[in-house]
Image 1 (tube, rainbow over the protein chains, first blue to last red):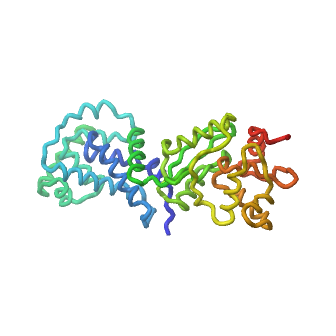
Image 2: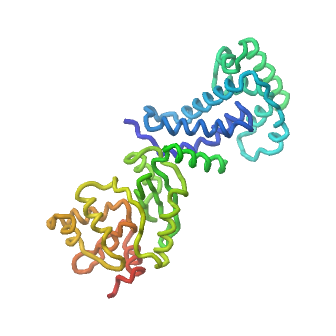
Length: 153
Length: 185
């Protein structure tokens, strides 16, 4: 049987990464809910986990699933983009820089970029998660990256 | 981030996912680790014991759902504070005995009944646990007590009055007996 470390270790070591990924995927406003859902799901499944060799990867995968659930639940409903200033002003956590910029993208672009580069999803799955066509997903991704290049230049 | 984590432990407790909650508390002898299950206090780590090792051991023997959380241990902390101030002579805490088995558990239950400020010897504890010949095993039971202080193994001495051993070191054992006024009587 695999020896699982105390769950607190996972929180201490990976909570920051999980939160950063979620902020990128769903935005700062909704990241908190997804964060709770991610860790509760992980905690529920933890005692039966067979392979403890990549706990960070396991958590990030759950986080992405929660982000996808979140996008599906929101469907095509327009999400107000009122958080740009907030993200730009406060970001005390080091190492979160790129995700803060990603978090400031319009919702579709933000989701497309995160799903592609953080969770490595192919275009078809990004499209499914966002409830749009693969072409539209590709376009969102492209627009998002263009904008990121400009912001980070 | 701290708020998020507090909310997480709260929700974990509500959903019955907090199998082992732990926290630390100060004592005159150094920092103690306290761990509880929904049944009761399951482990007290003494200042000289390695915190990480204790947590890994809890993950293995109780459940890997081990989380840092103060709320479930408030009462234990309060009673220990009072004990170290000399203002509490009887702990009133639910205990989870699952980390000791059979004869050892019987010894520990007998130790839990030794009144404040009094001492017994290992032979007496072996008798109380139902096997007067198992003096050495009674000593081992004391040495492996998962809930020291609250199960007061420091009140068990060698016949003849020598201190014997203590998981937290002999100075601590002596200090506890002094606190309880059990020395030099």
